[in-house]
Every structure is written in structure tokens, then in C-alpha cells.
Image 1 (cartoon, rainbow, N blue to C red):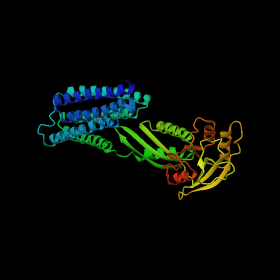
Image 2 (image 1 turned 180 degrees about the horizontal axis):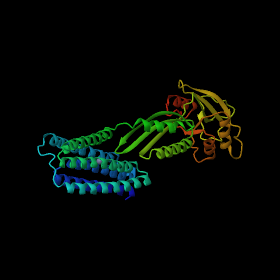
Image 3 (image 1 turned 60 degrees about the horizontal axis):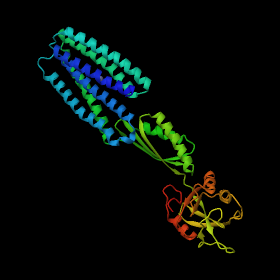
Image 4 (image 1 turned 90 degrees about the horizontal axis):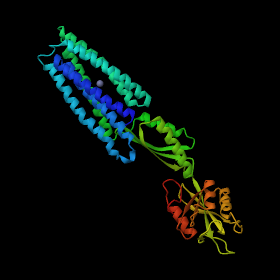
Length: 410
Ligand SMILES: [Zn+2]
């Protein structure tokens, strides 16, 4: 088990010890305020246990845990909060209606017990704070600070008990104050768990910061959508970016970089899913290799070629993304057809000079010289099952690719 998971368990145990001591003292001394404070410690146990569960689950690989399991923690907290409310109500009720309140006995035990509580709580909170800062766990740091704050209310209870012993009815009022504090804790635990259980969205500050990270990258042109939700104590974020690159490989590298930076800044984000689409161009230039019988000029009935570098002609098509129309821009005679070698690479370079964005072929260019050349020239290559140029044009026209590229899935 990791260090900070152990410390979270220690925190549960220390709070359990404090709860027991407070409850016994409350009974021995006849102090309602001390019993109320024991219930406060119960609420603290629940918080510490939630921290432990959070750390424990985070240590496991996300994929081995269905997302729903994160919510077990919140469900437990929700049920516990109703017990806390009930206990707070009981205390407040007794403080207001009770007859024999404030008749404190055995005051010397109370003093010894509270000195013990303060010493244990103080030493443990120092230790927990040190570990929390060392491992960078905000929840442990918060837990340590909470224990320190609780020392103050314990001292107030000591004053109330002593006051009651000397004849001032302070115990009753201290009990009501502690009951109110406990009810407030219960309310926070309940609201936090409900928010998560109802899939509340992430807070704006987190989303804003993530958006800033995205926009600070020069290749990110637009954050199309950005959303996230809490599950357990974890955050899930999903985003769609429009990027100034048409190559999937480049986009992938940018995304890995963005992911690293965001997870660095928000270590409690458990899952980050970034989708991307290339920036939409108004027009797209698409080239395809066609077969044309010798001494004939190509037209739209030309058959698509089984070759690339050895094809006699390339047709250059223009897709207008504003109205979806596809037209033939040019026929390019392949000047490299008679070369011995590197015909595909030369043809790819020629198409790049002509400003072609995409190449669509019958032939799979992947792993071939032409395929590598196209990739290096930032030209996307797609395959099609169309037989003729006309058929390809109609496929391109009616094919609306969600990411703006014309040809995937032709
Ligand atoms: Zn507390």
C-alpha cells in the first residue's frame, strides 16, 4: 500500500480513538457537549475513510474498474450523512429539552482526557500534514488542517465543561453549537455526494484552466466542445479540438503533449479524452490516379487506376466544402511514367507542388514509397472502391465526413 493510503487509514484510526475517548468522557462526566463532539469525530472518520477509498481506487488501473465503482464512495457518504443528521438532531433535542444537563461529575477525568485528545490530535495532524505535503496529496493536507481546527472546538468544550462544573450552564450551549457544526458537516458531505451521484459538471475554474491550456498551443485553432463530470473524487474530461494540422500523426503528438500538461496541472483528473478534427478548409484539392488508353484524352468516365506511380494520368478534383460540390479542376499527365525507379515518390512530389490535400486511390499506398512521400508532404491518402472518376466524384460529393476530410470510408 502506498504511504498516503496508509496515512489515510491512520487518520480513520486516530479519529476512531478520539471518538471513543470523547464518548466515554461524555458519559463519565455527564457532558452532552462531549458526546456531541464524539459524533463530530464519527463524521471525521467518514471523511478520512472517503480519502482512503479515493487513494486506494486511484492506485488501481482505471480500466480494471468500471466507472460506477467510484460512486460507491459517494453512496456510502450519502448514507452516513443521514446518520450524522440524526445524531445532530438527537443532541440538539436533548440540549434543549434535557433536565439534567450541566451537572458535571468527575471533572478531573475530563481535564486529563482532553489533554490526551489534544496531544494525540496535534501530533497526528503534524505528521499527516508532513506526509500530505511530501506526496503532494491535497486531501491529506486538508484532513490534517481539519484536525488542527477541531482542537479549537475541543478547547471550547473544555471551557464549557469547567464552566458548568462551577455552576454556569455552558455545557448545554456548547452541545447545541457542536450539534450545529456536525449538522453542517453532514450537509456538506450530503451535497458533495449528491452532486457526484447526479453527475454534476466539473467546476468552471477547472474547465477554464483546461481551455486555457488548449488555446495556448499554437496548433489548436478552436475548442469546439469541452465538458467533464465528477465520479467519486475523480474528474473525467472530454474535449473536441479543431487543429491546424491535417496529419493524424502530428495531431496525435500534440494531443499527448496537451494531455501531459493538463494532468500535470490537475492531478485529480482521472481520465482525459481529447478528440480532434482538422481545421475545415473552404476547398479541398483531391487527386486520384486514372487509366486512359494511349492517344485518348481523359474524361469523367475514366477508370481509376490500379497503380499510382505508373498511372498515365492524375485527375485533380476540387471539393467546395461550403456547398459540397465536386468539380474536375485538371488532368495531369504523369511525366514520370517511363522512369525506372521512384515514380511514386516523384508523382507525390508533383501533386504536392499542385497544392493537393488528399490522394484517393484503389491501391493501398501504405508501406510503399509513394505512401511515405505523401505522408511526409502532409497529404492524406485514402482508399476507395469506386470504379470510375464519375463514381468517385459522386461518392466524394455525398460523403460528409464529420471531421471535414472528404474521403475516409469511400
Ligand atoms: Zn472534525
